[in-house]
Length: 282
Image (cartoon, rainbow, N blue to C red; front, top):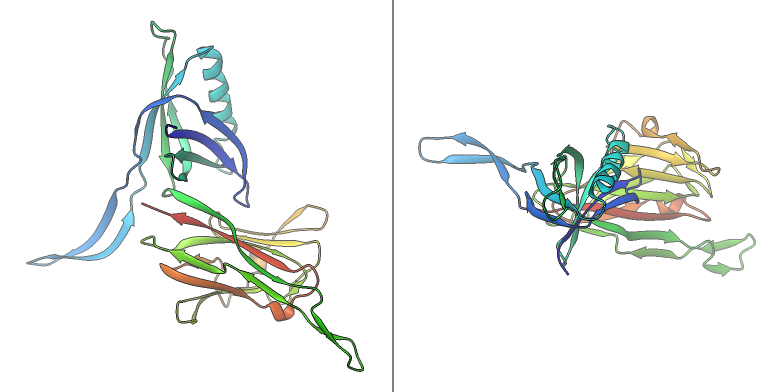
């Protein structure tokens, strides 16, 4: 198997909803990395104050072998459809070991004549707006069973069973990474915390006076900077204004190990939290 590329589009929950496979690609460049250093110069040495990954341009030659002009038009039309600012386009890179993505846009696609082999070679440029990342999808699950053990008090009483699976985020990247959570109701005043390796909270997103009912979902997409509620009828409501100004707006996991938690004591039938994150990588 050889390495492969594709252009993909993701919705506001970071799910792939369309793709265009680039079946035959040669001469790719820009798959490595370059770091930018901020420094303070001294007489003897420069002191590093900040390290960030430079967002590069990736180039490649796309070969349209069969019906070259037709395939070229199909590719151009696909790119045109998703080139508006509100659409999340990504380049998918499969190096045969790992599948990675980077956000951005196709900013150049040449078109010349077919060669003597009737091959139409098009030089494509993809301008990155994010580093490459691995999609860590639905790896976090926090759930409370509707009924656990029951006890014969004079009023009905039961203890629900908490289900917590892989609620840790291991981030080896040089900077923080965005976390994406989907909360299924019912839950009152959703409060999501990120805890460091010592169990100390360093980030909180809270919604005061809010109930997510059974059949509704609350999505916090920290990668796309979107917060919205999916109503029972499937419609969406912007929930960014509902975030408590006392705390954070989005969930960004620091370098190292982070634990995610939520106020399960305020939840009831149907509640579940599933979490993902973009694992940025050099």
